[in-house]
Length: 217
Length: 219
Image (tube, rainbow over all chains, first blue to last red; front, side):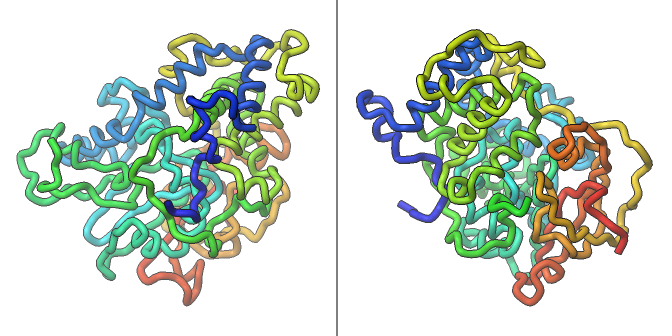
């Protein structure tokens, strides 16, 4: 188990369900605040359940993957996406609404884009779901702007020396998604089949889309 | 503020550790804390800038040693206390001692609340035309505000190029420091790696920030 990242648990998941008597300090504190805010009429527990369910089951990288696959097959959409991603995606009529100020940046053989938020953990939740723990971790936030190639190496990704690396620090309310390069030997593939090649990391810029021979479906 | 949250360019945190078995929440309290923040954040009592400021002002050692959702929880607890939504006595007893006060807006409620969660629009009317143009060289100002800012330390004093004009958005610094909603032009400014890191930069790298107009001066 890696020991040097801001892992998103305080080791209390071991106690969570089976051992009710060993409630962690955080469980107790969160429960207390929820109880108080609910009793005061500020919070409706049904809303909490619905929000959690939405982020656990409905919103995730599959939404971004659909957008990428469309851009790969439809050059008009690709251009519209790169010009104004929020507007272009709104026209797709996805079930989940995508927010404003979304910017898509395109990877090419000459430029590789990576997204980070050095000040916080800003991330396009509406397209990719909640960010992975590593995206919110100190090493990623600290190092990506200074040594992106070494950060990529932590993901097992090596770029040719001549490929430029462009890092986008999400310091305001603009949100970024990377349009990864379409894998070779996928001519004529359906959008659905292409979307299965689009990994979450490829849309953050810490990975590539899967190769055609890595397709699972 | 020059806090530990402003991490860009720091060394010593170790490797990035991707987890192939990533899940949205690693404990139930994290999920509850996340959702509580979303609901209370929709009540109009504070906006994203104020919410972030209350995470950034956690003691540095707490900030660095707390998980993401623990920071969110600590922020919510402190903000609720500060805004008189809950009392210390209530937090220590774990029970409410009376009904709440009216909130500025009705928070998200009901079993469809998840579908209603969305990122708000930050466009604000400009007070004047944009000062800078695409392609122009600009210097990020050397400023060290004690309050909230979105100008990261690693960019301050350095020269970059305006690449995009992103519209006119709520200026976070004024929101937190003065409590006013002020529109300022927002630009994507790109800096060459060598400009930021000198000989320690990696070859062929560049970094952009999203910079509000008050952060910039002509170079």
